[in-house]
Amino acid sequence: MEKLLIKGGNSLSGKITCSGAKNAALPMIASTILSDEEVTLTNLPYLQDITTMFELLGSMGADILLNENMNFTIKSNNLKDIEARYELVKTMRASILVLGPLVAKYGKARIALPGGCAIGSRPVNYHLDSLEQMGAKIILKNGYIEASAKKLKGANIRFDGVTVTGTENLMMAATLAEGETILTNVAREPEVADLAEMLNSMGAKIDGAGSEKIRIQGVEKLNGTVFKIPADRIEAGTYLAAAAVTNGDIKIDGINPNRLMKVIEKLKNSGANIDFDEDSISFQMKNDVPDPVDITTAPFPEFPTDMQAQFSVINAISSGTANIYETIFENRFMHILELNRMGCDISVNGNHAIIKGVKSLYGAEVMATDLRASASLILAGLCAKGETVVDRIYHIDRGYERIEEKLSYLGANIVRLPS
Ligand code: EPU
Image: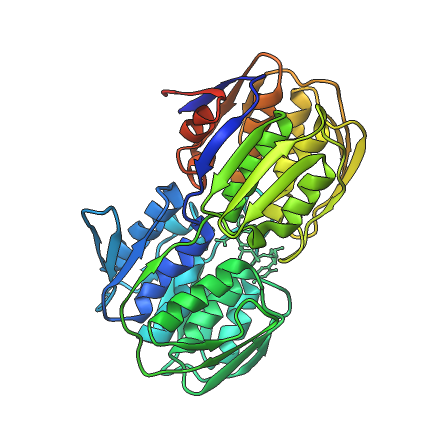
């Protein structure tokens, strides 16, 4: 298994460009199922999760072509095998995103039921309940979701809880339903609005995505499109956090700062000077040591759970004590045990982590448990004394494109060790 070796102590400086967003790209790839025409996606990040989503569509019979400009063209007409097998779903829960499009376009879907994962139980009941409200028949059998509907019908649906992929699934399904669908208590994450923009460019009639209420007027069919994947706000936030723990001075190009205002606000509270324009963020740490910042994760526009682990490290080397409340996932503190092995002083009580800043961290051999947890271990390695070896980095390759290259470019001492 490959590992990352980090020699800590270098301040990050310089400029990098943000990659395309994994969590925008995944539903966009799934949405190609809704059209018989070619869809070209540009700026796709090279990530394991993207490859898995292509594998899933390929296994159903989609034609996927990589053209000379490294853009992917997908033609998902005439899918034969309307099934997401357990082998794929167990490696990537976002496979559930093909459920809505398949039922809407092909009238049926068979998707392996995702189980729990490293960050929590993560059920999909909101997806299923709301599809049922649109007239789908859903049976759970042998570990699979079997869904069918002659034609989905528009409905007034209020989600019982805010769900990002659930909102995306239903929005996609409703584009080809009969009549109007109104979704409330929806996720307002930028990736939901991005998906709506793409679907509208294919001829869908979606209004309000990014707000609390989404209105979708069903249409007969969707056309092809060419669409650029927007930049990854969590990738950008992670590099800013890396600069915060290394007393850095960096610029990130290609990212709209409005997508991470809460993260920017908290970084400023930790002692950073941040300037931005509509397409870049410049970051400079003012203090040698970050100030502690309290965090409570919540759906957008509040502080993202996907940045919680990275802020654990900022707080771990801060000048005081900070409280982090994780309200989205019940088990998203797996990184804490590993961070404590590097000298952090963090105690966890349920969904509350109390982080006492320490003078310095020291390198250790640590194990990644999920994507954002891995990012936090790398950040800890960057500011620790000595060498850190991060194992199980396949987690990081799911969501960060060429992370060691980008960090090396900013001056970090980090290399990938072959298996
Ligand atoms: N939930 C339910 N029932 C459902 C759906 C969700 O109880 O039917 C609960 C979940 O268990 C969780 C909460 O609702 O406690 C929110 O989950 P959500 O459905 O919003 O998460 P998701 O759609 O599965 C997406 C991202 C995650 C990100 C979360 C929260 C994608 C592909 N994944 O997951 O990204 O953490 O939203 O913002 O968009 C990551 O990139 O590392 C990652 C985990």
